[in-house]
Image (cartoon, one colour):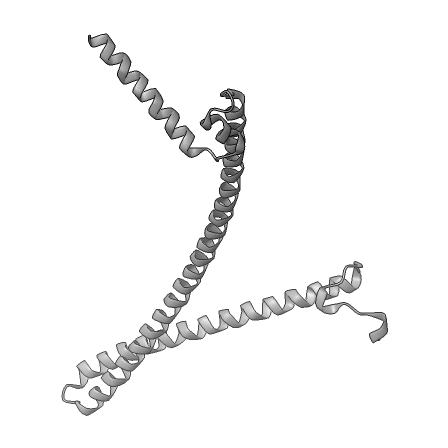
Length: 188
C-alpha cells in the first residue's frame, strides 16, 4: 500500500514537471499537434527548443557581463578621479589653514602690541614681552617670505624647463608636430 502511494506521488510529480516545462515552451504548430494528439511526441524537438533557449540565455548573459564590466571600469575610473580631486583639495586645505594660522598670529601680535603700548607701568616686563613678540613676528614674516620665494623659484624652474624643451626641439628637430602647432601649406 505504501509503495503504491509513493509510486502515485512520483508519477504526479513527474506530470507536474512536464506540465511546467510545457508552460515554459513557446506554442508552435508542432506542439499544438502533439497536444491535440495528431502527432506522436518527439523528444528531439523539445531538445532542440531547449538547446536554442540555452544558447540565447548564454549570449544574453555574456552581453550583460560585458555591460557590467564596462560600468565597473567606468565607476573605478570615476573613483580614481574623485580620489585625486580629494588629494588636491586636502593639499589646498592645508595651505589655507597655514595661511589662516599665520594671519591669526600676525593679528594677535598686532593687537597685543597695541595693548602693550597702552599699558606701560612695568617697563622691564613690557620690554621682554615686546622683544619676544617682535621676534615671533619677524619669524612669521621670514617664513612667509621664504615660502613665497620657494613658490617663485618653482615657477621659474618650470618656465626654464619649457624653454629648454623648446631649444632642444630646435637643435634636434623631430618631424612630429603638436596639434596646436600644425602648419598647413595654404595658411602660410
